[in-house]
Image (spheres, helix red, strand yellow):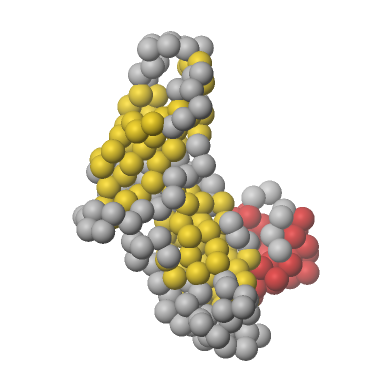
Length: 229
């Protein structure tokens, strides 16, 4: 049972809060995040059921890194009601694509991540410099199909849509028998590219979002493999 189905059963009263939390924990969600997720579902069920939920507590984010699994998923940060002070979830890539501002305990903030990459963020609160709060959002690149015979055309998808104004995508490739990624698409605004290999083997792809005005960018995403037979 995936998280969306589990959340729906919880909202419909088919399973208890205790069982819901226990199953989330069994699926790899921390206990604190599971309890916060249970609470936010009740307070905002339509918004939260399909979100990726991150719990913000004094001195940390959980889970981190947060691997979204798909492009275009909305991340919702829930600021714990028991926190001693306000916190933020603020992009630190230099692109300034998201910033919750300081949020009071018990509040939430959301942002949708449409492009592949690793997005580092932090809390701007300065009173806990001894324990800085940092997190990372991971968004995957997509390949389709994952394998095929020589002569096949593969689609490498960087984002759910073409790049917004002022942004571009960069993509790199790692070819068979090579140990170094090299540029494949640089500064493209198209959400995907076609790859037609001329030899067999395994090819890996990674991409990122980049802002034109200052050159700031996400880190390259985790690579995905295309196998040519």
